[in-house]
Each structure stands twice: as structure tokens, then as C-alpha cells.
Picture 1 (cartoon, one colour):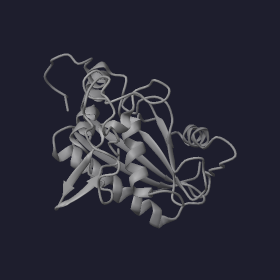
Picture 2 (picture 1 turned 120 degrees about the horizontal axis):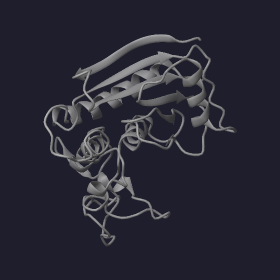
Picture 3 (picture 1 turned 135 degrees about the vertical axis):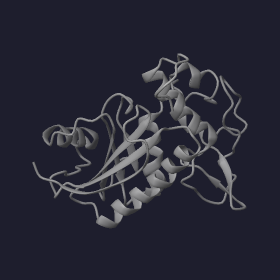
Picture 4 (picture 1 turned 180 degrees about the vertical axis):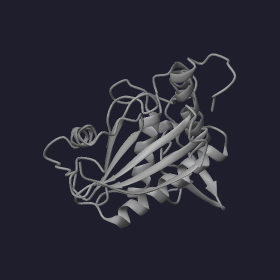
Length: 241
């Protein structure tokens, strides 16, 4: 095993079901400055969800893999992250984000599954797209279950080309200090007829940049996803976001 623990950023409860956990893994091609950028991006997004009362808290653990995590775009980057995690004994249910500087098919990608209940791999390239946005964007995919009836039937604006819930439509354009900015999920519903819900009323052409803050629908979807796993949406007291 070879890795170096670099520190943890956290807020709120550390021992609740609805505490969102992320592991940032510096791959062999990643820079320490990339890790700082990724951490700061996630901190802003997750602090927003926590301060709004939609999660119990969050933890962002940072590790330098000491060159032992190599992202090879010609292979399967998400599988490579899973293999590194298994080899080094990281088993916590969380989102494991490999931070690297290789050119991949897309700036970021997340594996299947839901990080509330299992380890989920993510890769983010810091040579493509908007890395801070990609980091928060992919983390939201890891923790949101778009097929949950509470989300799909009342919140998701439309399906994607495969007929699956388009979680991007949980995003929106929001006012940040007088400037309209797109959240990590862009909120691209526009005038597309609603199939189920109507969370997104934003048009992708509107807005003057991006923000790490989350839309109200994205935050609510995080909460619904946690409830789906831990309470099956039953009305109980105790550890609920």
C-alpha cells in the first residue's frame, strides 16, 4: 500500500447516515494545486447543502496516491480507481474522485451505484472543461438517485436520450450577488415540454458563468436520495437529513 493522507475538510455531523463523504485521490498525473481546487469547489457546494439543512454534514478526505493511481484514458479510468481503492483497503461508502491531468472522453465521469450505500468511483480531468464545476457536478451524480419516484415523478424535467432521468435538469440559473450563474447541474430544461416534474425552468443560454452553489432542486434531490436508502421515505424520527 502506498499513499499519503493530506487532510480532511468537514462540517456538521460525522456519524450520521446523511453525512456525505468524499475521498479526493491525487493520481500520478495530478497536481497538488488541482487537489486544492477540487476541495474548495466541493466545500462550497456541500457547505451550501449542509447550511440549508439538506444533509447532516460532509467530509472531504484528501490523499496523495504517491503515484500508485495511474489514470490511463485508453483503459477504463473508473475501473482503475476501483482497483486502487480495493488494493489499498478503502471500503467506506463514499464518492472516490480521481484527480488527474489526462485527456479523457469527457472532463468528468462517475460510475454506477449510489454513494450513500456503496463506494462509487469518479474521475475528473484538470486539463479539460471547467474542473471545479466538473468536480461538484460528478459528485452530485454519485449521490443522487434520479430513478427514485420522489425525484423522477415530481422533480426531473425530462429524460435523456436513453430514456433515463436527466439529473442535469435538477440544476438552474441562480442569482449570486446580482449575477445570474449556472449551478453545477446546468438546468437545461428551457422550453422543453415537461414529462414528469418541472424543477428546471432555466435555459442554458441564460447566465453569465458558473457557481459552485447548488440549486434548491439539487439539494432536495440529495436529501430524497438519502431518505430512499436509509428510511425508504418512511416518516421516522432520528437520523434524517
